[in-house]
Length: 158
Image 1 (cartoon, helix red, strand yellow):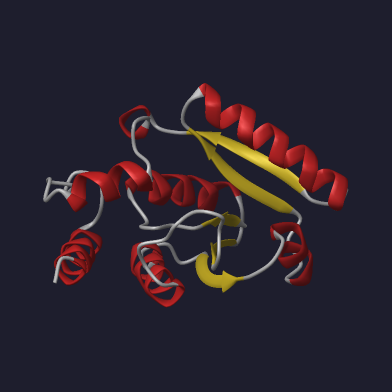
Image 2 (tube, rainbow, N blue to C red):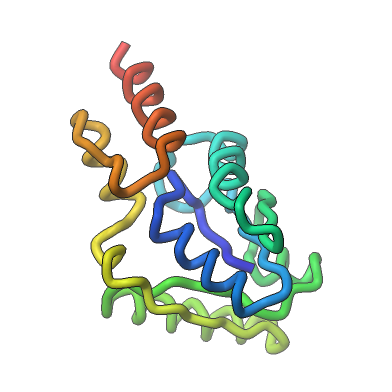
């Protein structure tokens, strides 16, 4: 399972999912509904964009979830959580989260994939900030995500 808020999904997320799909028979991209950060897109919108992004990978599915990630993983029979690491600060955060998840459920492991070099700088926050000022994020997200960002920011400015 590859969990996240995916607000919005970008090429870094897609790359991690693609690589996880090569390692595992089945990958579930799990879109968390209420993270402790402000969201631009509603859960349904994030799920729809993620489904579109994952449509080319036959062994990847997308679902939404609430609550603790390890609880959801256990409910759907998952024993591995995939996370992407970009920079050293990601490692510290993900390391602590993996240990906390292991404390909650010893049967679930965390697999960390190092981001591809071209995606090192990429985060949903960066994409949103650039898009909010009308900047070009076309090299960071698929066209349909770029269009969704443009629509969202146009509607927010009304």
